[in-house]
Image 1: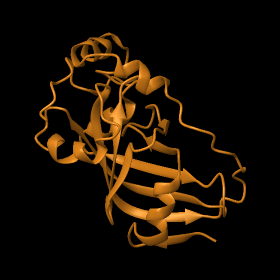
Image 2: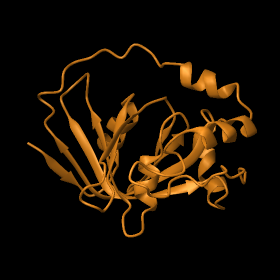
Image 3: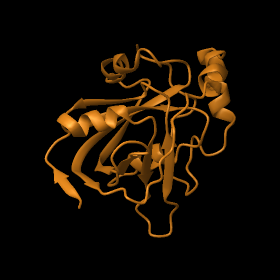
Length: 195
């Protein structure tokens, strides 16, 4: 049976930190807009900052729907979800209010040290999630799957780019500056980092 938690600590925090993949879900405020659901991985790209705050690196390589929804005035709704693919069955969700911290935001220098082992030119924003509801569910229908290893293609590909080359890459991609629904997303040209 599912349970609600007041904070992200103890075994809940341990569970989050042990999972190699998580999912983010956001949507625009309009009823006919596109719901976005994204898988996230790469070890070290998600951190629990405190009992009610998480953050993850938003990398280049895909559209910017999550960022657009978080930046939409009056929005900011986000859900993070983890599934136990090994060990005891569990699905954990953190519903919250999210914000995107861009590379030229003074807070960038405050948050980016959390990701020093995985930082690189492809880091285009930091998504900070302020938890409003933390709950789990049984996860009995989630299959067992073995984690083998991290994929390195993303880090390798973008690790070869300079900051200027990455900014040019972002400028050419569809749905980076504007979402599928026409909402402003990442600022283009991509801001120069403040750190």
